[in-house]
Structures are given as structure tokens and as C-alpha cells.
Image (cartoon, rainbow, N blue to C red):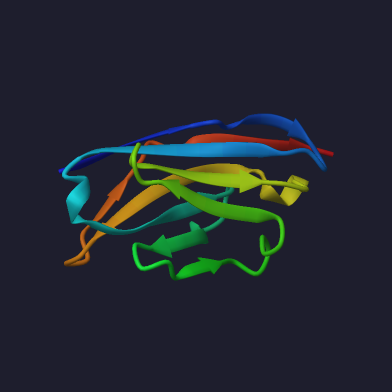
Length: 116
């Protein structure tokens, strides 16, 4: 079992920045990829960014150049640095972790609201 705890969401003005954190605990040795999805009201959940343990990263086109994924392996924590935020980035952001055999764990979600 893997537990994921997110933090760092909040309200920010357009153009501002936020950093989301996702702390993993439990059987972290089973994780081979982590990342973030988001879901805006009335919309489907969409991938924001992901990274494998091998260093392969993937970003949604809408956030490329603005969002950066990083990981503190000593603390089993993944970060999503979000800069130049736009109102359309408003959503609930969910951290996920995928194991080597494809099982996914999810965090509880953290609200990000960007005001215009």
C-alpha cells in the first residue's frame, strides 16, 4: 500500500505561482512513476505532468514552460512548481503514483484557484 498526501493548493492571482507537494509513504519502493492530474468543474480529469523513476517526464501542452515537476527522493516527495498561473488552471489537483505492475494510488486532491 502507498499513501499520498498532497499540500500546497490555494488561491492565487493570475500570473502568480504555487508549489504543490505530494508526500508518499508506505510501500514507496513499488512506485515507478508519479505525477499530477487535475479536474476542473464539469470537465474530465486530465494529465498535468508525470515522471518515471528513469527520468522520463511528460507535460500537458497547456502547462509546458510554466509547470515543473521535481522529486526529493530522500523524502519520497514530489513537487509541482506552477508559475504564470492562469484562470484556466483552476481545478482540483490530484497526485498519483503508479507501481511497476500498473496499479495506481491517488491522493485526496488539493484545490487550486486562480483569480483573474
